[in-house]
Length: 249
Image (tube, rainbow, N blue to C red; front, top):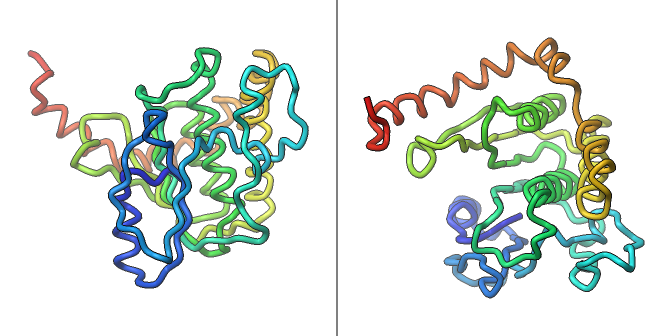
């Protein structure tokens, strides 16, 4: 979903010669990264802001008084267009030039558009690689729990570039993208995106909170699994922080 600079995609193509690729990336002119992926006839990369994919996210009618009315994009995915591997590792960039009104909800808009469209266009049995931050945060834990309902989930924290940070990757394999819970997740994430894009603060908070269980219920039903997943990544960060130059004492 967010190609640049292209390392993951280049590796996937090397391991799967002849595979057809479709990707999106924020234009460098808007603060995005340059793509290092070699061009070939099997690869199609479109430079655009995926948070503005209104048609693909089910927003058929746009409010005429919206500040970004001229920036929303037409449908990019064909029907049906399914993929065996989906990579969702986009994150909000400080270099991205965008209107101030977008700032508070931009992380939610970017995450939900990646997850909703990625899962919606996934071949049943495929694999999703998703970048997350802070496993202990409510929204991240809810995402992990949701994927656990229709796929096999494990977490991975690279020792290069991520070791001292809160970031990690979720690898969801054998994703049953047509499972009723997966289809409901896509629907909910699209609702959150629309509320974050067009709604009031009340609309947004209602949709955001409705997308997952309460913290108490989450811990009751998924707490032990969450801790088990945490043990896959926390030791890497703990070891890295022990020797980090910015840690004093």
